Image (cartoon, rainbow, N blue to C red; front, side, top):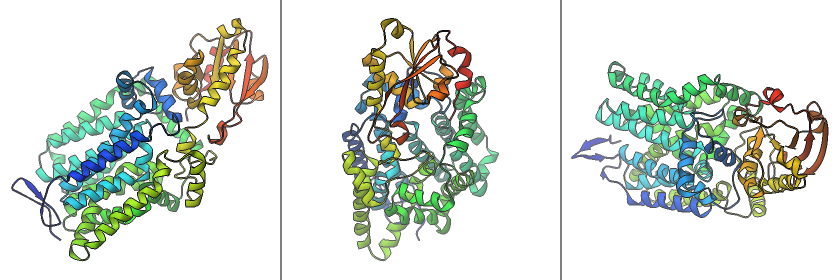
Length: 521
């Protein structure tokens, strides 16, 4: 197999020709962006989006369950574009399109020719996990792009042996940590890769340590915020691992990887992993293979969520496209068109599981016919008719309408001192965002950063409580009355038939018991 060398300022790929950027890659990225834009209003706001919107109204250097970068980006996006579904989904769609573009470019710098670049780009575009995270606002939309840009910088470092690339890598890792703490997995994988490959010679150069300093300085604001509030994210992670995350066996974890990245891409990313470790052309870039192996092992040992590994796949898809292109170039070029057609057809079949394309009732039957009703299960909550990432887009307006009806039926003096308490940040965020048109007060909750924001001046003399039970409220309320029940067809089961209580406590003790309401999970 021909190795990758530089010639005349261009890259000579494993397919034996000087490689250039393939315009089709940009076309695939553009189609990806447009597809997300056209489907952005298919169902409704996602549970976490309400929470992120609430966070963007209260800008800080950190939050209980995530760093601040995605929230600051959201605040800027809202200022420029507003907070409609289309506006809210602009940045996730753009990040996903850029991921496709960077995956194609990474294939090129690894030595892949035009066909390999197009294949890698299509593989990234049809992966269900990238379709899902690109379709609603969250920090997860930006993480795969940051990892892939980091991998691209590692390749440039290998090509040039210019240690100043460590500064760029430190910048990406620092931004990644400010976006999501799981960027630490990339850093740990890279650390092992440096020790296990010829990159170890950089340990004796100042630039690698300056790069680490850049990452630390960028991460420092969130680190100081964590210190100020007693490292709440550690408590959140511990509780989530104990009480929320669905435990997965090794077989289940691998099975969810296959579904998450698309079953048709399985031979591609496996070939990519082998390319890094078992071929003369790929060994030069073995650091990227080590990053994947280390993060895979860490997540299996920690029983982490399956989608935590999602950002590590674009480098495997890029390498796999090169391996496949090389193999077919020597044996059966017709397989290229056949596999690409299979990839596109497979992407078309699973696209409704990642994008809100079909009506909800049609999707229920479609997912059942494919045998993938649950999708990638990440939590222990009972699932309903739809996969969780879709179910969490339903039921919010109905819930807020029900709460508003209860609120508006109260006497005027009760409304003036009434608070609304929700059991989780999705409910609280929906009340804050959708309740504006009903004149509802800001919601309170003990869940994650809502607890940290506190009860303010609310005394708790009159409280509308969403969820829970009368028995739980009896210790605080002098009188408890169930006044309504929420109903939603396709939402998560625990959000359906949610009782709504009217709690009265004439002495008002909400501030005194607030510490007991904390739920970091």
